[in-house]
Length: 189
Image (cartoon, rainbow, N blue to C red; front, side):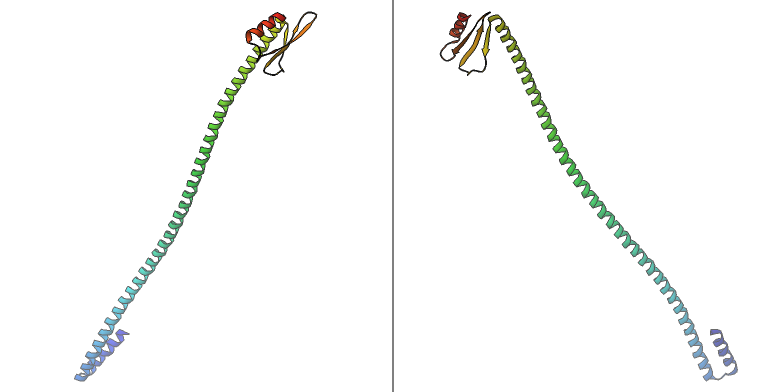
């Protein structure tokens, strides 16, 4: 289009040589020159607009990606905080269970020690009773006295066994000394 306009202006300038026409031709040339300059600037502006649009789209995409990343990282941080809290709670629970187990273990150890002491005491008592019974059985066999263990604590009762006879006895502990009771038993024998 510009070429046709340029050719038309040249043909006019050749055919007409008057001054008015020259002025018109000069004005037309200036208009064409301004129009060409305007079109170049428009092309440049369009390129700049396209570049800015592309840059804006790229920045928008980066912002969206950043927002997605921020959201992703925010969720990841939130999940990690939840897991951390859960682990803290689990740790506290485990420590509490561990403390309870340690307390129970200490109680069981003390109970075992107490039971062991009680067992030793019972074993000692059983041995003592066995020794006493054996001693009294021996004493009974030698002396012929069978003791009555079901009487009150302030009395000593029993039966002296002879070959063909038996003689019961009862002594009051509060009325007699040990020496007197021993003498009375020897007299009965």
